[in-house]
Amino acid sequence: MAVYFKDWLTKKLEKNLSALADESSSENKLDEWLLKRLNTRATILQEKQTPVSRVSKVRIANITFAYKNAELIELLRKRGYAIKDGKWKDVNKTEAEINKKIRTP
Image 1 (cartoon, rainbow, N blue to C red):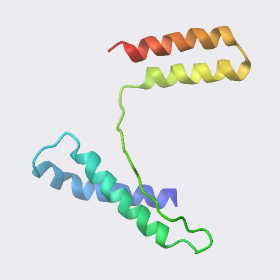
Image 2: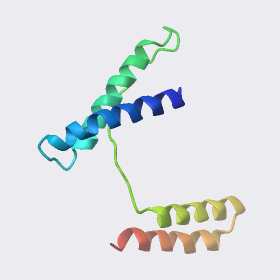
Image 3: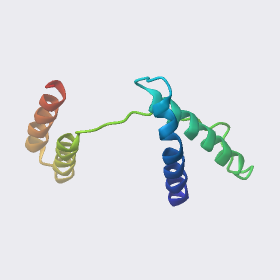
Image 4: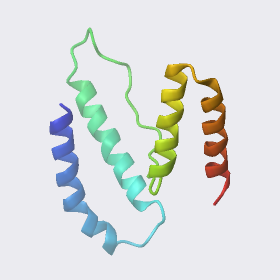
């Protein structure tokens, strides 16, 4: 199902991104468009579930695009390994690096 969804989303994005560019600009235009489309798709998929596995309602509440966060992700990974290995001094050191990275623009 994930591959199907990825293909569906790619086609929809390619088809509709040019239309978005022509509309009045809005900072969250892509977010709003994608949120609407994903909620529509989630509803369709939910309706196809069997009555036994059916969830009362599926809704995507928020989408946030992130970029330039590779360094932060690496620090989080490093902290996770330190936690796994029980190296608490390294955890504290990495936590300080993460906090510095988050607070420094």
